[in-house]
Image (tube, one colour):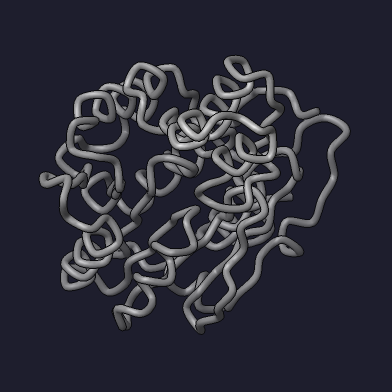
Length: 262
């Protein structure tokens, strides 16, 4: 298993780990490189699943309280926990509330940042400037304070005014993200949107924002069932983690050139 350490500057491989990051990059590399080379590009990060490894803590608590093994690498949909509860023969009430762990504000405070995402954020902030780096989350409005506290602690490079969260809980989160991206796209030559949820990625691409690149870093086994000329998919490596390691290499290689990752 990889050691839990963070490379804060130039990426390098952990000891005894060797891989070709380009084999985990699916999409138009030339376009990705062109977009990231432009210093006016806006970078937009999702919160849960991208900046923070929320699934790890949520599934850990579910397992501890119910005695059912839940593995982030095995997630196959948003109702993963309720399906596990149903398969285990738990009560209807338990099944109904199996996914409530995702909405526990105290638990969200204990989530750690995703492995390898810190150097990516530092890189994009240093290259594009803090004002061109955003966080776009579908979290409910009541989690704003928790979200700000976590980001201030883990990602002080990001501007709190650039954290985009719904003000109205009734507003559809998919529409909220697409509309937010459209507004940002009017202010930059390119927008890079990074999210783990395929429905948010598809909605953004279906919005016909011509200067938007959508980067999907799949949660568990959930892969896009659609294609698009401006869709980038980063495959998991190692499989027990999110795809942050190859994503980190892709960002550094696009901005500095492939030789920077050797």
